[in-house]
Amino acid sequence: MRAVLNAHPAQLKLAKLFSSVILLGPELDEKVVRLIMHLFTPEEAELAQHLPFYYPRSLEKIARKAGLSKEQIEPLLKEMSAKRTILETSKGYSLLPLIPGMFERILMNGSDSPWHQEYARLLVDLYGTGFVRRYTRQKLPAVRNIPLQKAVESKSQVVDEDLISELIEYHQEMGIINVCQCRQSMHFIGKECKRASPEDGCLVFGSFARSLAKDGNGRIVSKEEMREVVRERWEKKLVFLTGNVSVESPNAICTCCDCCCHFLEAVNHYGGKSLLADAHFLVELDAEACDNCGKCVKVCNTYAHQLENKKHTYYPERCIGCGACLLVCKSQALKMVENPAYQSPTKDFKSLGLKLLPGAIFSGIKARFSK
Figure 1: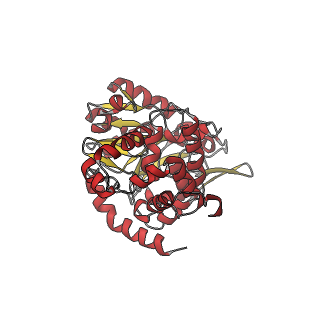
Figure 2: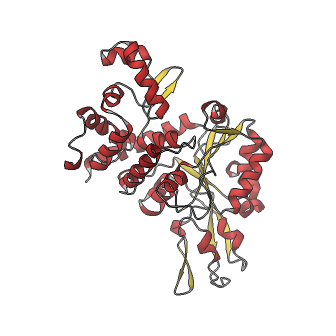
Figure 3: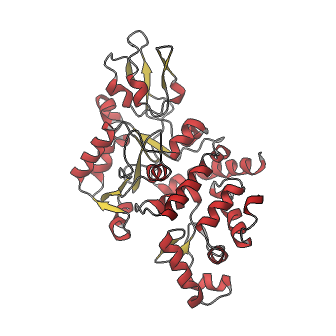
């Protein structure tokens, strides 16, 4: 890492922390160090080492660990919190993993400055190394796809738990984040989305929505406005990806595209389909009915449909069951069929975490010892 020999020892140590396999981090290299140098000054990195990941630590405990007074460290903690490089709650301060975690927090309020633009460039460059491959060798169904409702409405009696209408109906609090962090990051590096805009932010429900306006991250919307936003996102041929939990649980939905979304980037290029729950429905092709128009190719975000020598080819192993292709197929060559591998979502995120924990530990061990 010759190019970053000017990194402070504290920055190097913090970069190593963020590279932990427990946090699904990348291997420690020059790109990671450059990113940490951008996010944390040497003084900030020195203090940040005394913060835990996820669970906040009180100001008093951080001061004791750092060997400093509360008065000495509080201004610096506040500065990092303002930059969103650390998380501040009523219980104290903590670190978040690079992605997912810090990435969403830094960009979700829509801030646009040279610092944010450089951050996006460094993060996109790091993610583009495909380091997520280290964690996709094990099935970890943390995310599920919500199918396009019109594509499965004839079978709605068996897909209620998978439909976004049920999510909207159940929750009284819902909102929209200011920007989509993935599209915002790509916009910052000069790559515009072919399907949507950075302002098409994630949809949040339940307790996830309560602090949106207070924290400057988004706005609260009514049920009817949310329904209209959902219709607009479907028309833009976006994929609805959410935590693999039931409709009763607070949740967030990312409306994703293949050109910007980092999760779909992992699905399409880095083996990330192992992080997706098996879809309730998958697409089935009637090859004889297909007229090779290619319209399904244009709307598919996972490249399951391809035109090869002007003939339509379908790769079912790439299908995630979103159903967007059905709405553009005029020859009715496509239909949704039930997936026998489907399992109902987990009750809540705590249950999901416990369910995924053994596989995550095994995946981390394999990542730690594989090259």
